[in-house]
Length: 300
Image (cartoon, rainbow, N blue to C red; front, side, top):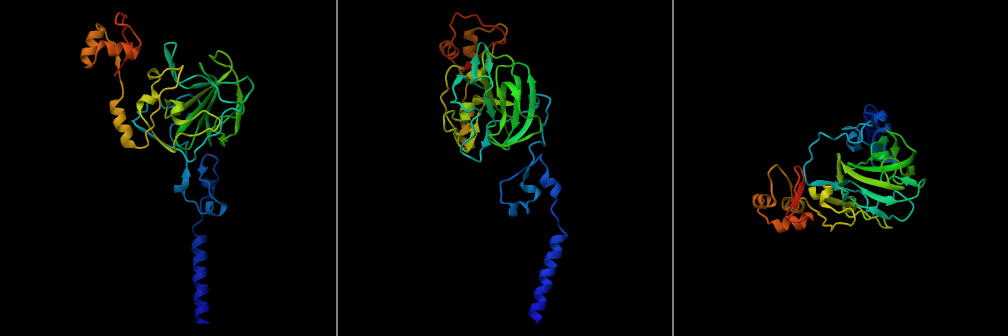
């Protein structure tokens, strides 16, 4: 009997302790936060450490890029929880223009062929940060995801979501089109990290399997600079699985030299410990080419 009485007292004290420490259900129910995928019984015991609020920093629904004054340190580490993404279109993905230098300016995404009115879908879970007209891009949707990436869907003909909407992977978000500065119907797909455009094909395979190239990828500056790539062909990919690999590669990457008043190819070659021939081959120019102030040259 004494043993039974002691057991009853312990159970009563445990229940009282539980009742005095309720979980803040309001915070857990907030549509602005993302609860990690768990069973309902485990979700009931979540603490704030398990909640990811992707709207906490630089959340601005009025501008395309709210990170303009943020300094980014390379290499950038990206992690994915899955090995695949949802295709943004239902058709086979035919890339008509790549991330790279195009018509004397940077093209910071890839163009995927489609027909006006085709449905567009989100590649990952996230929250819509921007859904409005953007100069050049036309009707544009930007979705921020839980690993820090933002995906951009531009030249749309119709919105199906609005800013602050919570989105699931594969969810319909609008119709493709040719709004803004677009030559023909296509989806301009951009991949950004804190305002920095990333070479999409470095992260994803755009075949029928929708593969993510690795669950952890380190990005060097090379894969964020359009003028280091050709928009007509895919660059040779060299993925970095560790920070050390990326740091070594980052130090060895090509330098960018901005032409100043009085510069000549011979002076530039001397200053950068290279040759005129190397500069010409790398930049597809002739030794007799006239340099312009402000022109950027790639130096190996």
